[in-house]
Every structure is written in C-alpha cells, then in structure tokens.
Image 1 (tube, rainbow, N blue to C red):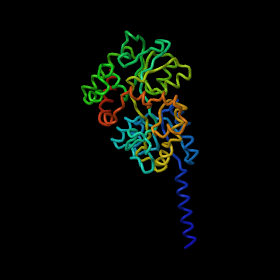
Image 2: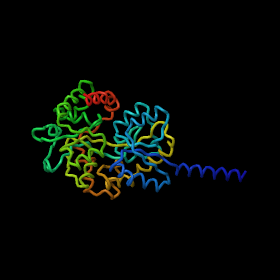
Image 3: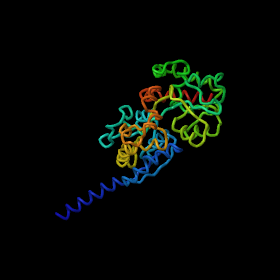
Image 4: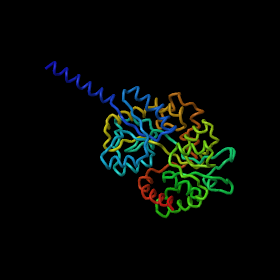
Length: 345
C-alpha cells in the first residue's frame, strides 16, 4: 500500500509537471508587433514556465471561425482586437477564460472580458509624412478629410474595425455621440458616405499593421490611419512619420483561446503568466503600447518619460474615444458586410 501511495504521488507530480511544461501554439499578426510580444511576453514566459511556445501569424478571427466550424482547431491562443474578440465570443468561437487562474486583480477594469484578457493598450491614430506637411500636420479627423488644406494621398483601413468612427467625427459628430449614431444601418451608411467622399484620395486600403507602417516608410502615401506603436517603430527605422492622439480611438488588444483548443489548460496557465506585471512592463521597450496590468507602472521599468508617450497615459487617454465593445458585439457583423460592399463598388 505504501508503494502504491508513493507511485500515485509520483504520477500526480509527473502529470502536474507535464501540464506546467506542456506546449501551446500562439497566433498573432506578425511584424514589429509580434516581435515585441515575443521578446516581452512569449519568450521569457516560456523560459520561466517550461511551456514550449510555437508561434504563428494568422489572419484574425476569420481563421478561428474556420477552424472551429470544421473541428480542426490547431491554435491554443490568439491575439485579437477587443472588438473582434467580443464578436467572436458572442458567436461561440472562444472558450470562456478562467479568472481564478488568470489574476486580473491589478488590471484596468475595462481591459478584460469573459472571452479575452487584455495584452496591451493601443490607439488608432491618423499619421502623416513629415516631409510633406512638417510637424504641423492634421490635428483632427476633419483635417484628415480636408484635401484642400492637406492635399495628398491617403491610406485607410480595409476592414471595418476602427474605420467608421473617424468618418463620423470628420462629419461633425461629437465623439461622445459616435456609437449612438452608429447603432443603426442609417448611421453606418452615413459613415460609409463620408469614406466614399474621401475615396478619390485613398490610394491604398491597408490590411495589416506591417503594411501601413511600410507605406509610411516608403513614402507611398502622405497620410494614413493606423496603430501608434507601428508608426513609432517605423520612425525608429527612418520613416518620416508622426501622429496625433487627438480624437484617436483608444483600444486594446487581447488574448483569447479558440473553442476546442487542443491545449486549453496549458493555454490558460500561459495567459496567467504573461498577464503578470513583470512581463507587461517590458512591452514598451519594443513597441509603444501600454500595459493592461496597471501594476506594470509600479515596477520601475517604465520611466515617467516613456509612460507619457503611451496611449493609456492619463493625458493621452483624455484626448481619445474609447472603443465600445458593446457596439462591436452587436453591430460588427452588419457593419462589416456593408463596409465590404462599399469597397467593391
């Protein structure tokens, strides 16, 4: 009996060790963003936990939808925009997260949801070529649309997330009323009409952060929408680009587990690890996105100077329109169909 008990304990320890080590496949969007995630989060967490991490790039929740619908789920963790995750969770494509495992007690309260835990805070901004306009470029979405005051070529997002809100602000809708106006097909059409107005000056509808950063590095367009951290990294690489936080969209990326993920328990443990402050405080070293764990500001790694440049600093956040996850969960499907129809006109 003693030998049996010993063997049982050993088997339990081996099983728990195997689970603690294990493996996960993580999918993100590539480019400087995934490089930053890898250096700050994935690689050190893998080393500290013994969990083997396989990284892939993917095309977003459409890939998850295909895997779940066919029962061929290979991804354990996916990076997602918060709005897309809200929609995917409502569709039943994601596993609910276990917040008894993932400690979010130090998270900003709006930066987690049932199906997705925040990984970083970013902003959708308008950026411009400083060779074209100098440092005094557009300071509002109305300026971005003003082709007489700011002549030149534009790039704009090729999918609906973060594309309609700027158009309404350019059309004179106050930021606090944007989602109320968008909560009808008529309001969505109003935003689309504003994009149609600018379309003769839109040379490229971009599909990834790497692409819109490259557009500015190559000087292919004079202005574009896009994500602040990508532009900061492009500037470090020599791009003549800057941007403004005024009327930007304050958003966050998050991590989710696809429904039926082959290593769900290990994935949950890995999300718990990378949600800790000691990982999140390293992210701004590689890309200027803010941590979702507010304790990351207290470790001493993020200096006051760096904190002031991040989207979630109080001064910058006050200038911006926070993304409404409720709107995306309810309206993104309809809005996405209408947006794609507009693109094919």
